[in-house]
Image (tube, rainbow, N blue to C red; front, side, top):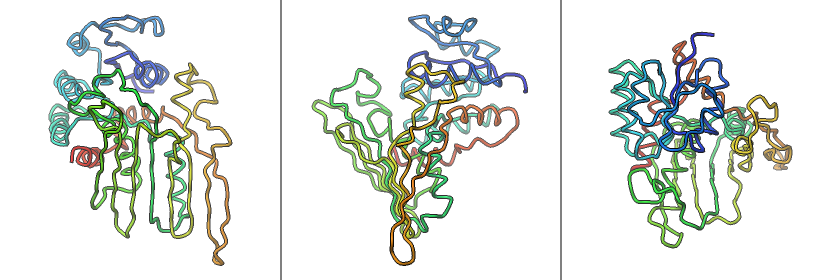
Length: 337
């Protein structure tokens, strides 16, 4: 193992405690060195020896830190990324990267000019759902794909307490919250669409931001991909529905990692990322006589550590990070349109 990458974390709320700190602490290629805690100081109780800084400026001034994880409200992403790069740090940043593609291009160029890298944190590529669908599509069992539906349904009638999500400001609203997940999964599998169409809605009482969206992506060979999410869906529909010339694949959103981590499961537990047997996908293949044949497809193992391994390999061995600049710019061009 090469020298550990000294890492600083910009927030120790839910995302810091669940999605970042356990992984950079467990991966031997990283050293969890410091965290920004403006108010409550709790990180050291879970991670003895970690430094706690009161300000962003103090954290990025730490000469030991090589990688900064930007897990702060959406509207701060561009500013914190820019200042971290200028301080000589690599950056791992949560979605959405920036509100606009123009800001993203500027930051990608800045990173190149200072010899640093930007990594976008799209952990859902390592969901059991996403990896299972990729395997089914790449197997060719569905034939030529003709229609694909990805959904992210929730029922949250009340206006949430997080101002950066509920107030009309850059990168707020449901489309910028869940849209990046769905777009990344679609773009990573099917590529850049030839065209797209969006519908936004405001359905909760007193909402100031969109709480519903549908994005239609058009691809060559008449493939149509529909990405849908809403906050007033009392009966969530199947999250993944794929139809091809030879059959269909249907699966619910069943990745268990977030729930397990929130419940306190350790990364060393072999049950982490293993879906329940009843959540297998349904693969229906038509034979030459037009008779359907149903089989259950066991899900792949969900593994968010794969993202951190990809960051590590990029920084130490120059292996390209799988979430590319082109994919992120395509995503943002759709979000901002």
